[in-house]
Image (cartoon, each protein chain N blue to C red):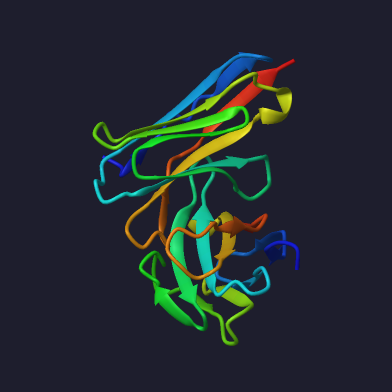
Length: 111
Length: 114
């Protein structure tokens, strides 16, 4: 079993839809949880950062962490074609310098 | 600079050759990381520098891979005797020192070994 599991999709939704992206993990030492967005042939760009359990909202994006279930989610409201990208979950332990990434989910938002 | 800069953007090399990939981090960032991203996979950790020293090189796959950061700024990832399995995107990231700091990634170097 990999430390971080993420459904690679692809996921295709119409513009305006609510998108739900998820990851599960097995390492209980993870304390920092991130979501990165990666456009084709670009480097990952940090979207959301959460420490320990709880919710965090930033504009159309909401990140949720449930450490008891070892499950994290990213919700995108009112999705736009410009949101079409690969979304990577990433996690870090006490030092946080080493991130463990999921495989990424390829999202397409159709106009 | 404004962001993390990696050169070259693309590199095609023949099996068995030596390659060097360069990373120029954001000015003032003391921490520098190399990751490797294979097709359809998430980035995998290779090595972490704090200043000039490699604080953790546990992700380097074998002794053909080596990285340096002699002056605590620019870093070079070196791969000897390249193999077709080394083909991937090599990503560099930098951050300020401290736990939980935001890591800024470069656009990557796409290495193809033919």
